[in-house]
Length: 436
Ligand code: CMP
Image (cartoon, rainbow, N blue to C red):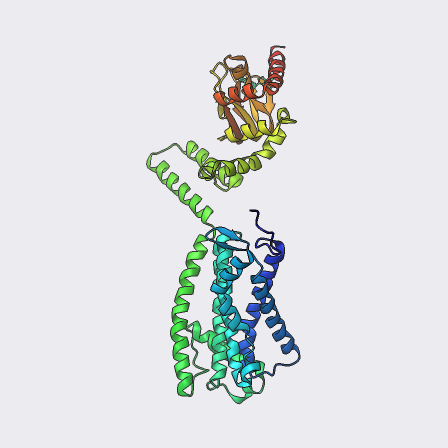
């Protein structure tokens, strides 16, 4: 049975924007609610609007949660009953507690219970986990951001707690204005958490002293944790570069140990520079090796499309041919003045140039028959006409090549006879051109 289409798709744009909005409201609630409670701000005017907005958002979100398909053990549940059951067993209680109008039922003295809204912060934790899993943003950067967010929120709560307990020895001049009182208390929280503790704001009552001790202990732990995490994250930020540098270090050590001639050492370093500049050190075949066939095909088509589009002989080639080619092309890099093959060699592959230039030269390397650029191909004659290489092929600078092995080449030509004819025609033209 085809599942009934639901109004809200989990991955749909609407739901994602909504989730982001709910998240924002949760953060606003986490900041606003405790602050309003400790500063005893009356819920009126702008605050009333914000408060109602937050409550309205949470309420609508609960309703939406009954309508949005959920994933259970990797299966999408789309039936109303299934969705409701999953929600009731999961977040429902927590969400309900966070929006329950306590003061309405039990009177104003229950205002403190509004702090239950903070329970919704648990959503933030799962949301952030989801983002981290999706790998859309640099994971290290994201983790730093999340950590900074929690530390700032913790400092805010500590400041609110400090105010609730009477704000220690903060003088009356700071008490005159509520924002000044908060500023001074936040200052106390930050200096305590960061283990700076200047001692200018200190506890007076036993409760304040106990609170200060708790925040100090938590602060010391948090501070150490943050430093350790940040140090690790910063070193991970450019993991690709780090890995690449390690590889180069290893090669440098090896070359020195083996007394490799300086000229060759420079060539090798030059090659690594090129690898970094052209593809950030990635080896295409290695990166794709673990992917299943269908995904590999998609990635290969995407990567090679630009290259294949540049090759005139593939203009108008059917999708089937392109797919077949793409999957069998092997990337190779030539360093300056490398020979791909020499005239007279036996032919085992043909080549497509992705970037850079290749010279087709006579056996002695003195006469240049042609200079081929990105989008050209060579080495097809030996395969098509079953003869030795008619000329040598030499890289001018760094060249990115894709090679196609003879067996695959033969198989593809057999499958696509019109392509074979076309290639044949061009090969005879090239050959007669060289003889003139
Ligand atoms: P092959 O004979 O296998 O090896 C040398 C290759 O150089 C040859 O295939 C052609 O692909 C290529 N080639 C030879 N002559 C020319 C030319 N005049 N213009 C372009 N490419 C050529």
